[in-house]
Length: 164
Image (cartoon, rainbow, N blue to C red):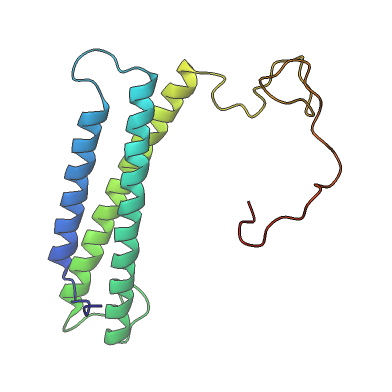
């Protein structure tokens, strides 16, 4: 494995810009160019934002580790305590961290809006109990008049290789 090179605040800024561009491109692909998006397109856009947020949070965690390392090297554990040589570098990292947090908040808000719109359009989508009122738990789905599942133990023990 190759040794990890030290990333600068500028590297993190560049990574943030790349992630914003990638999310924008993915949203353009998920949503129609003209007309109102349908439920599938909205769901796809929400998935795009969820994935983008996952990657953005990973960047934020990496940035947090970098900031903590800088603080330890400077002998400070709290923000604002370390002032002197090298504190400009720490300030740049913290500014990038603030930008990452701002983008994450914005994307979370958009994702929540998409979720609310999907819920509005598909009110039964989020419900756990989707069975028609006439079915009980023991019935086999998709078969009328089928026998209920066996309540007793299976005849042979489960394989150790595939716990399935």
